[in-house]
Amino acid sequence: MNLTQLECFLTVAHELHFAKAAQRLHRSPASVSEAVSALERAVGGALFVRNSRRVELTQHGLAFLADIEEPYQQLERAHRVAWERGQKRYLAHVGHTAELGHLLLPGLYAATPRHGEFALKLWQPVLMPTQEQERAVESGALDIGLCWSAHTRPALRCFAVREVSVVAVLPGEDPLAGQSTVRLEQLAGRPILMTPRHDNPDLDRRVRSALALASAEQADIREVARYDELALQVATSRFAGLHPETIGIGNRVPNVCFRKVEPAITTSICTLVREDYDDPMFDPLLDTLATLARELDLDG
Image (cartoon, rainbow, N blue to C red; front, side):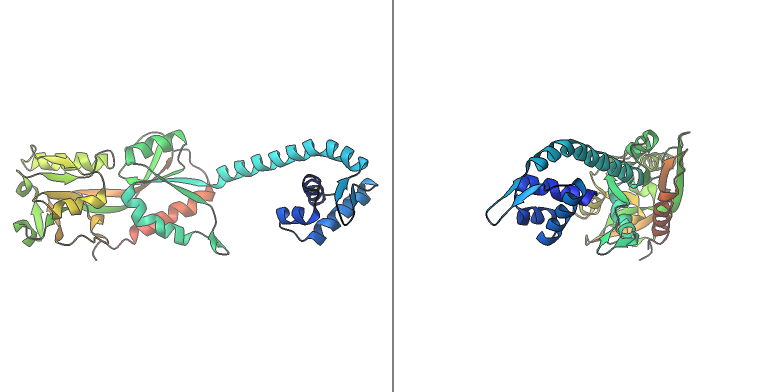
C-alpha cells in the first residue's frame, strides 16, 4: 500500500467514477484502476462494485474510507506545512527601491537558475524605500535589502557595491546645460527637485550639507514622488533636479541633460543583511546584485 494508491482510492470514492477521478488526478483511467486494484489486493478485499452502469463502495470499502480519510488528510496537511516551511526557509525576500529594482532586478531574474521554462523560485521582490528596508532587515521581515546608502546600525551589515555621483538634471535650453559641470551655488534661487528623502535619506543629508557649504542653504527643495517623474518635471518647467547619475540610464524624456555637480556629491548602491547573517543559500543573490551594480553603464 502506498500514497498513490490511497490518493486514487479516495478520489474514486468521492467521484464514484473512474474516468472523472482520473481527470482530477491528471492520470489515465487505466493507471487509476490499476492502483485501486493493487490496493484491494493489499487490504484483502474489493473496495468497489464496478459494472457498466455504476461504481459503488462495498461495505469493506466504506469501512476502509472511514478509517483512512482523516489520517490521509492529516498527512496532506503535514506535507503542505513542511513545503511552506521549506519555501520560507529558501525563498529570499529582497527589498528594493523603485529605481534600483528597475535597474538591477531584471538582471537578477535572468541570472536565476532555471528549471525548464521557469526560473526557480529563489527570491521575491518587495518594493520598499531605504529607511523601511533598514527596519525590515533588522526585524527579519526582509532577508536582503537593495537600497541607497543606509544607516550603520549594530544589527545590520551594509555592503556598498557601487558608488555613484549626483548629477544636476536640467532642461536642454537651460544656460547651465552648456557647462560640463554645475556649481551648486548656480542652482540657488530656483526650485530643486529631488525624490522623497525617505527613499535615500543619506543623499538628502549630503545634498543639504553641500548646498549649505555653497551658500545655498535656503534652496527651495521640492520632492517628486518617483525617480522616473523627475526628468519629466524638469523638462516641463524651469526647475532643476538633483539625483544619482543612474537617472540617465535609459532616460526616455527628451530635452533634458545631466551634468555632474561641484563640489562633488556621491551616494552608494548598497546591499543590506542582518549582522548575524549566515546563510550560504542567499550568497549567490548578494554576489549577483553586486556584480550587476558594478556593471551598470553610467557613461552611456
